[in-house]
Length: 360
Ligand SMILES: *Cc1c(COP(=O)(O)O)cnc(C)c1O
Image (cartoon, rainbow, N blue to C red; front, side):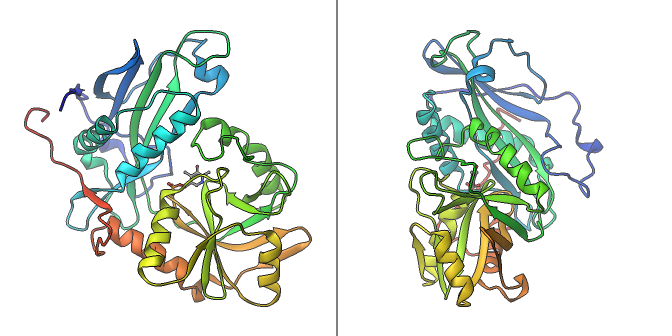
């Protein structure tokens, strides 16, 4: 390795204070975090330090001009207690694609990988072991110049913190096809995991919730005709035995769960198509009885079944979850890899390396 990650350990772990039987998503943070700084044209000062607040300058550029990106991923434990990652390198690649779109420096993929291994190995006791639970990992990068004026920052921070999350069994979701607001337009930032995309989604989501829906189903910005995705999930439909999902046209976040599902389906010989899907096609399939399933795909829930979709005046009602085959099979396949019981045909499961004696 041509780089060093220094380690400063916490003096007393906060672990005894954590109730692992009651882990609300996103509110519990592990003992350590990884931090790096970009200045003088390069990433440096790689360090693992106690999880703690850090000072931020009031003019820090990310707060004003939105150069901020993130990732969301998980580490889990196999049933025999070994910490595992799921396709970690894909997150390193994706955060650099997001960085490119937001005019931010790329982060070295080898450092990203090593930081994940060391951080999760140090906080391995924070990985919950209940089925379906995991250690959620949040890598992110933001512009840190103390400057007023729109330009790319010269300094950035890259951080990874982690926190245990319990099993996540969302009840089936009700979606509203959104015909006023958009999430992403051609040429915009929809395919980057950029913080601002989420800020802009909150008002439409709140209005949809006031009407009794869980999330909006985003449509294309030109015609409000083609389906994009929902919330922080990619969408899948099963129509007459064929699995269909919107193609990555530039407005859709390229989900790693989405990609994994497509590969699993192809491996099993189940027909799967990536292509534009119009709301008319969904209405038609609903009317002629061939709309079999719909589900969202993302790291947090893996699969979130869709129960209803409001499209214009029509409430599209999907068959009950109990009779579904594809969504439950995909969820079980991914969770089987996360708990080490499944066969890892694609080489997606990466064991967390044990700490070298130097860092213990
Ligand atoms: C993160 C995210 C997804 C899901 O991506 P995964 O890699 O599967 O977790 C889908 N859509 C949006 C908008 C997202 O931010």
